[in-house]
Image 1 (cartoon, rainbow, N blue to C red):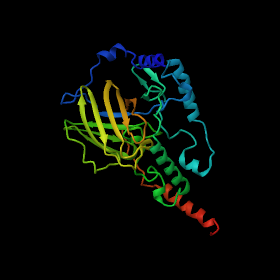
Image 2: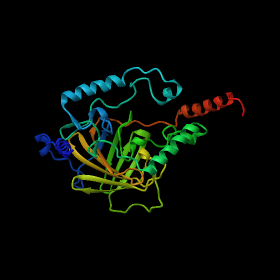
Image 3: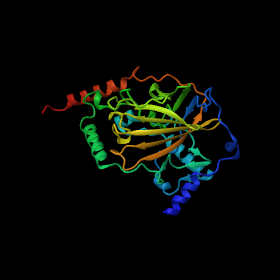
Image 4: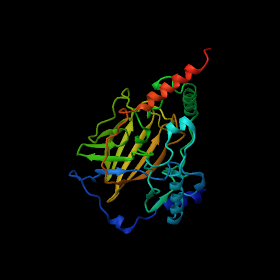
Length: 319
């Protein structure tokens, strides 16, 4: 096991090309690296390492080409099946999705998972408390799928999309972010659900513990050339992978090349996960623009789901 961990660490710390070693990031007027621009985090690399790559954190170029081809073929096959729930929950192919067309490439390695710690590339086990919490939520969803709008997901209700974070993770579409930067603030605009996250850099403490936000309370500072953003004060409503209000996320943004930012985050929630865990992924420059996100406008799906549920209830014999 120690040998495996050593080999894994060696692979993930592979030396970058010579031009990257001498490359210096552009600077903002305050002297810090300029992170501004439009970036995408779309990638075929999953958050957790698939079972077929157990003990294999990186792939060769040849292996990656075969795997990428398989993933793209699987995603683009027609899936005209599944019934009403499947039709609502997914499309029959990938035409309107933008999952990317390649695996994540970081430090001159091709990754099989975004998670780098623990070394197995998997989210740590849930605590017993979190398992009970998630099971209760599943039971509620199964027994009351459409009693009212509150029973439907936050995404369907145009309130929140978990991939925008924190942490920011790639989703099936709308994986674009625009970063604005001033001397005292950084603002991250996500294409998904058109959310702007404003991060103060003036050394202020977190908001009072009683103040809770869906995306947490974010404060930032610079550590050398890395922007560090610390988010706490979450509510229990967003539930990142089962987390509750004790979620704590630390994000790091490091400009690593003319067209790349390394985004690294650490998740800590002792009421949910048995230990903290860390993942990293590249943000790649893209031409943009970021288009306006429309959800409430023309959102007939939620009304139709609830109307259909009431129609089904009317067909059932009275008890």
